[in-house]
Length: 370
Ligand SMILES: *Cc1c(COP(=O)(O)O)cnc(C)c1O
Image (cartoon, rainbow, N blue to C red):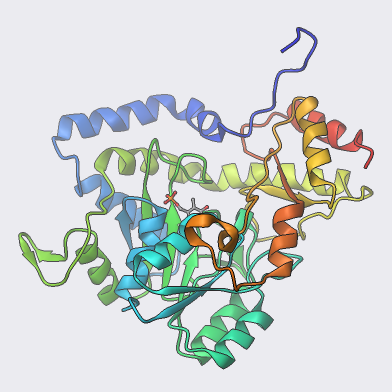
């Protein structure tokens, strides 16, 4: 890097900014776990499960698991989804969403997206539900942007399909005042370090509307045990550990403030880019802007321009899941999804950005001539 080039605006380390003001509390939580001698499924996990369920505000129970992929898989398995079943989701997501469905033995059915929200299209889901037997529907609240969850939930209910929300990018997001992840029978969350609520490693959680489902997920996360050493069903090892739970308990009370900062940055971008040729995310009061995703057919040129200006813009996600070798579906055609993947560019929006950095991002975008 030449001496005159500006220091890069990082998108990669939002957790450091969240942790810095909390360093003493995080260290105290880690010491508490060290002193306790309990490292797996102890009081910190139970405490965090209670506190996160309370935060979601819809009753039910939360069950900590090892990561967000497992949260989706165990929710589906608790709903009885397995080989022979078909599960509807979208292709413009982290591969994890589809990987979790495939891990149950079920067949993923990829549904087209709405071009404005870039989330599952209720119209396309209705077409699929009318012609195929779908056991479960897994909408993704991509970039912290709420899917049309009321319509999707109503469709799933009408066709007897289980609704499992992928809330891995939407901790704290709402629709009509109700938290995303609580609209169906299950909500799945990830605490991967870069998520809106991130741990210091892997972590995940399943929110369950019903206590019986929560008991099933608890058994599935530990070899199918309902009592120690006795497996009632087959299961997995997918436990949240005490250290991660203790850290998450420190960070959860700051989640709303961190989301509010993301929203303030997003508002600034929405205002500043209104006159540009960029296609902007819809203004949604329930969004939590895990990413701020703009669209342009000249995406690669914009990315190169921003990177040269020191702005770390990211292409999330470049290849829809049905075009990835490990999960490819050669017969699947999803033009809106493919267009979104070709056009989308994510600008830095994490809560650690200073006002000055936000203005530098804006200046860099506005100086682009398509
Ligand atoms: C991160 C993420 C996952 C997977 O979570 P992991 O904790 O990495 O397993 C699933 N779906 C979406 C939309 C994600 O962003």
